[in-house]
Length: 116
Length: 114
Image: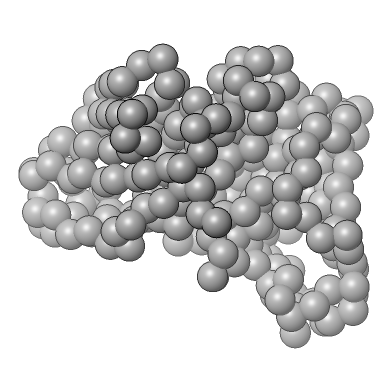
């Protein structure tokens, strides 16, 4: 158990809908990262938050957004869903991720999103 | 453009022997490297890491070697056990450049045969 929790574990929805994925980092970790794993693309970085502020953006679509709350949990919002958004979405957390220190990311169990 | 490559999609090894998983990278800004193990329907589990100031790091049965000039790293598992059967991902970040996001390889599926 990494200490990172994600809910829900599975999500099935229809095209055009909007969903919210939730992540709680390990106790004391300030950084949260979101990754997408699809069959053909492997694990791709989406976005990083550090202590409530957006720190880095990767291959995140404009239809997707995220935020990190004062209690450091994070939510990833996916809207106008398309069939191609079906994937595993992982959240990871690390202690620092922004202070010039090497930092290990610990991953949650993931949310499997299926868009029908 | 794949910046982290794991050229072997799969590897089979006899129990008790050494497993060697390889990873190549192209981005010279990468300075922190990690190996993760992943079972189906679970998140990646951190195994071992190495900073670019070192060329070897060891943790129990797991050793990671880094060859900066060749932009190559490898994970050695000795002795291999059936429970090691999983997909192994190599990942890298450019911490010194202020980038903490991980760039992953596509993984190598290790099968340890009893």
